Image 1 (cartoon, helix red, strand yellow):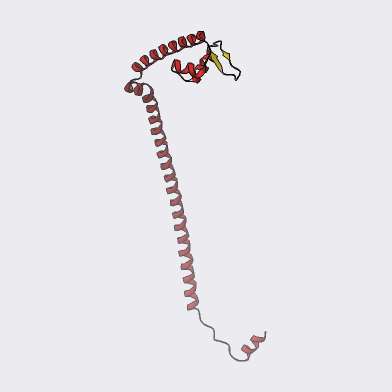
Image 2 (tube, helix red, strand yellow):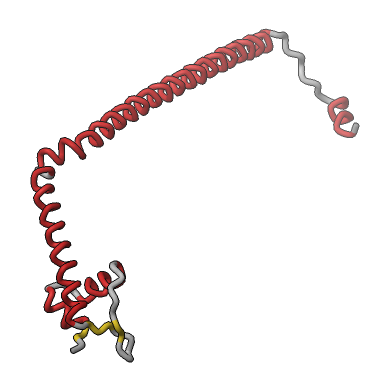
Length: 161
């Protein structure tokens, strides 16, 4: 009597893919029909039932171990807290470096502004000196004797020259 993969899977309570994986993984001697699908006999089904039993026992042992080891508080303190502490320390270090860099940038900008202000003050002093000199020259020009205006023939002759 030959049974198809889907019927064996239902009998074992697993998926057909699981049955196919077990056949490949454990090199279970299995025949294939003309379509290339596995067909199982009673001996092969017994072997698969044994594999399922062993897998079930192994899974139950792992679940029992996991129940004790994976208490939420224990899991957090064991696996997550150390990474969280490292991340927090690194974040604080980066924040301090960022603050230091920001302070350096502000200090540099203040020095640049101070230099620009000093240059502007020097330029204003130069302009004040030039203005004072021009005022002095204008005052001297106003105080100088004025020459009489030329009238007559020389004025007319000056236009042709």
